[in-house]
Length: 354
Ligand code: GAL
Image (cartoon, rainbow, N blue to C red; front, side):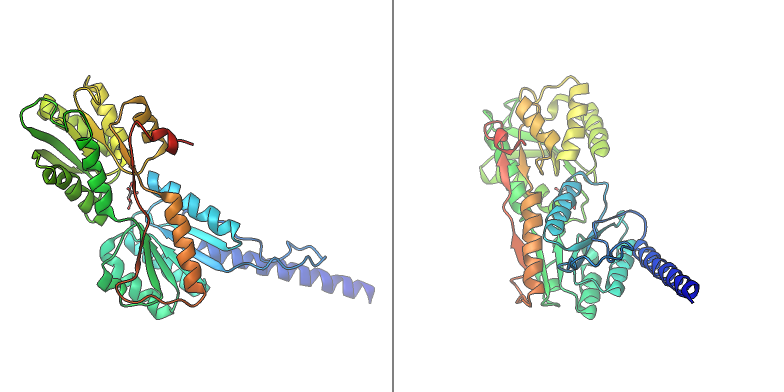
């Protein structure tokens, strides 16, 4: 009889372990790269009942691609805050593939997450994403790629947390206006520039491109665009584009506008290889305030950058998510929450360095 009970107990143990393994398998079906910061669901097979560590809720986070310098800082900040607040978090990599991200959103919905935080791959996919989360009735915070107010109005448990991209463009223009010759290094009465653009489908790329130049024009300065090339936010592309432009336009280039810092760091390599010197015979500005860019601003190798506040946006995204979890809804026209950009110059750069 004793033997029978021992066998039965062993069987139960084996079965419950198998069930745990099964859960794990389901989680990994989110596909490819993902990081999980979940508390273990059970007691890891231990017999003693510990006081239940109740999760604050389960959150699915979709990032457009992990291989993006700024979004890496952002997602790390997001994960840290959520984890500290006791949420079960799963962060997945969309690999810059909207179809893949759509699947990941559907998987999260099937798994019954309490809320979603989504950095869309394509802004143009916003309608589909919003329809999907609305249909599933899941509170959702969109980040980094802002849809239009009309698109968001379709679902009242949806909010966007990000920055006003036009502001970062204006600040870039102002960084050039703040130089001793207002960007006109050769004194020919106009500022000749190249523009290295992010992904042009993205509103950040569109508005930074427009407003950086507009700031110069609004100050009464004549501008000449020598070239505009898409660099998709990517450091290597920034370097190649800038090297090609320097070969083609040489000393004519007075300003290199980059829609983000990673491309600016690439451009700096090209500038240095061409024997040019930032702040002496060429100006260079970016956006994000990545650590590498802060170093270069401090060393005088970048004219300036603009803080894209990853930590502030992550904290804002979690705060809005918690409002939604608490039952809040958002009226049309009030679904965008902005965090300010900050101009980073050689004078204040130390305040941003960790
Ligand atoms: C921007 C950021 C870029 C890139 C992009 C991705 O806000 O400045 O570096 O991360 O988001 O959408």
